[in-house]
Length: 532
Image 1 (cartoon, rainbow, N blue to C red):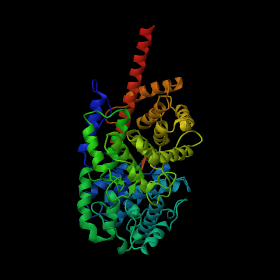
Image 2: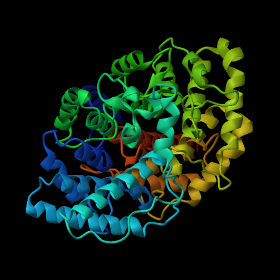
Image 3: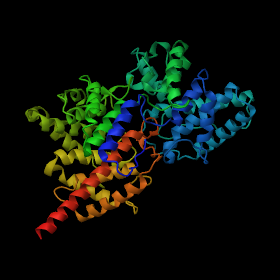
Image 4: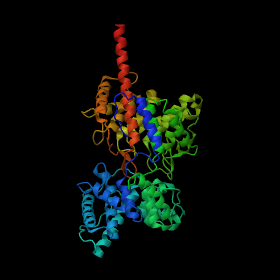
């Protein structure tokens, strides 16, 4: 799916085409995950296409010995996963001599990379890292001890891996013990079950229709530990493998998030009439009075629920924000029940949903007006001193800042105007020389977010510095958007991922907003010349 702009193709045509493609894809447009694929490789030797996964593991190792995307701290978990999977294959003793040699070398390079990481981070706030990291360290050390003692695979040297600073080696066992007495494992642990399966008794094995927690790794781990689930796992994992050429993403199917985020992004410019029936169908299917979950087997959460409310409102459906009440804690919304750290973007989406509903139903002001005002206060209180926001669901501050500014500019009025101005100033200050933005390097995704920050802050009239920044951004997006572009992974799950269709919708909407801005400026200039 390309974000390039064929000559003569209008925004409406491109947006409608994107909606049609998303609607026809029953899995979602995310790339395979090294972390997830390595977990399946380790746990599921009974699954067809193991040689494909071994080849992928070897191909994806970086020259420095690490695996994964993003800066080194983000590579901790994928590299642990890659090393452990290679050791698991070596211990099985089924690989050829040539593959055994390559895997042994890969393990040594991976161990060197892990030992070179900063001992105490800081580590990114990815899903269940506090459980997954110490669990993998324990698995690696156990396999190293086994292989070295057995003497079958020589060549491993150096000390055993320590648990990195900031993580607790006993965390997986402690969590398992906590729920043994309860007799069930909460749904929030299903998606990352592979980090706990070694510590779980049969009484705590969760049931699932489909993949456990929408995770191939969790599903394979459950089958490895509890063979009664293997037949079901073979069926579920084989279907996913067919879609991803023998490999696996971290969550699948990725339909709810993809459809809601695509719809909301395109609506920022405008939803073409031809796409409206499909988007309305998505909203009708996804909206749930009991709360919305991002994928089957996950917990309901405020972020997906807010986006479902927002999209339903945008397409004129008579649904209200009542499902969000499940997550309100008095000042803002917890992303899910039992949340440890709050989410700025989930609350920004909630504020947008409330504002959109209030515009359609002014009589709801008594119910939702005070709640929106409190939410505005909470969001402004989360702004960093430099002017931006950060969030646990995305590595880039431009994503969180765009979401917050959009919500505050719609509702906050004078109260939030200083926060919006500060965000716009930070955005202008951080623009790169080529007209782009990016936390680690220039990206069209982050540039699209920055464009929306500046456009939201440009009322009632744009400042000259805004105009210059937006002109540069428009040129960058025109030249950087090309067929086959692979977006860097910036979104947080267990590791980094890139939801391709969502990113393309954000960029497409930003380019249309910039085109409309330029057209309006030309019209205004023509009127001034006529008046003169």
